[in-house]
Image 1 (tube, one colour):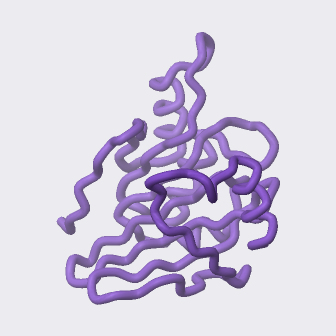
Image 2: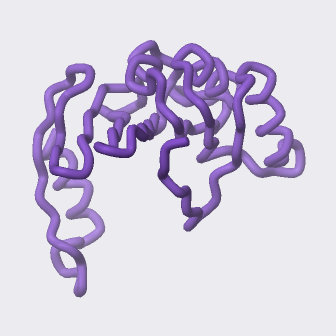
Length: 162
């Protein structure tokens, strides 16, 4: 998997970029809730999800604040995402639509409901003449009774327990 990632980055000539942060590739096992990083402030876990290429979702557990955020990545609706997001305060889930290996907003809402999350942030959602952002948000609300938000570029979410 690392070889594929490096080859893909090589297509963009990334080694010649100036002012790029250091990039280090690490292989993660394709197992649920694999530890990725842990320090005094938080713990990051990963789980495989289902996309056209090997893809992971992540779970960040903040220590001391009892706050958990999960991120799906692009994926078909899979039980691994439900387990990854179990009882999270926030789930950030893609809502591309019914295209191959993606999820609809309704399916993202179902995942959020099954996981018992408090709030759902939709990302990678369609915005066309036929499907506006509010339509997407309302679709998720049909299957998830909690708070539903539309994520936006550079949006900031304050992480704190209630």
